[in-house]
Amino acid sequence: MKLLLISWGLFFLSFGVFAQVADTIEVIKKPLIEQAFDFGDKVIDLISGEKWAVIPALVYSPETSLGLGARALRIFRDQENPNLRPSTLPITFLYTLNNQQIFTTELEWWADDNKFYTNARLELSNFPFKYFGIGNNPISGEGESYTTQYAYFHINYERMLFKGVYLGPRYEFRTDRISKRIENGILETDRPLGFDGQLISGLGLALNHDTRDNIFQPEKGWFNRIAWMQFSPAFGSRFEFSQLTLDLRKYIATRPQQVLALQSWWSFTQGDAPFQHISLIGGSERMRGFFEGRFRDKHAMVQQAEYRFRVHRNLGMVAFAHTGQVAPNWSDFSRNQLRFGAGLGFRYRLTPDGLNIRLDIAVGDQRAFYFGLNEVI
Image (tube, rainbow, N blue to C red):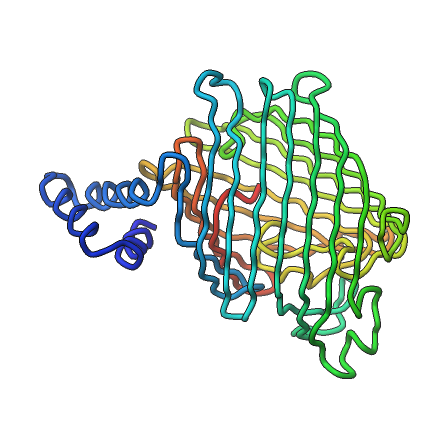
């Protein structure tokens, strides 16, 4: 992981800055491994400003292939109120080898002694992707390519009802324009809702139970979330459906600097939802090792476990395993239909709050690598 950070320094920093850092390391008489860690820390300090950290954005997943770009990150801290959780504002632009252009920004803002929480996210993308069909046994094993240009936005505002419990409204909007699809392919012959594009707009409620001791690297506590959304023509949506999502997480400190993270995630969809927005599994957040959207249907469930431990200084590792499935009806969930995956990962801590770079190696129905920021669970 240190070698990866060193390579970033060589590529993105000027030769003058590199020479300065190299001279510093040469003077300090330490073991080689400690010199490497010192150099990695120096690189992080150089790209981090007092208010904004600007870092090269390097991502990899089966859905995007290699993605290159830039990420600016602002972490807001109230020095006069150390109990107030840090607020974050990342801004990212990526271009991937799959010819995808992706712009995202997401505000997480805590205020008034953690009594108020606001989350807003904006995504703009030109996104070549794959459609496999609907169900736990996809129509296409390899997937059919199509390209969608989409804009997505959500905002939710929550207020603390009592300690650790938050409730508030949520608005969600997404529009897709399918610019390319295979003539007489699966999308055109199967014609799922949304095959020619979509526009959804909906209102709902979010209820959170949050007792984590740290929002980036929790070692104990719960993070449970129940969100219900109603999409309707009354709000400007072309499709009418509702969706209920449950995300239940528990963090257990087993030993010093060792944490067991558990997650149970469920999604239930009722009504006429487009294929882009029905429940799905796979990708970098739910069931690594499975292509995102390879399995999609009205309902989905994922169970994940991750064991995290510190290796040395800012370097850590994780071991993870997961299982999940999709189904057209609640009663169709079955142990015989479960998909399984597992893997290992490396972490390097960027900030004192615990923000990490992560590299995961996963095996599911494929071998896959994932590179990005932050923890999955």
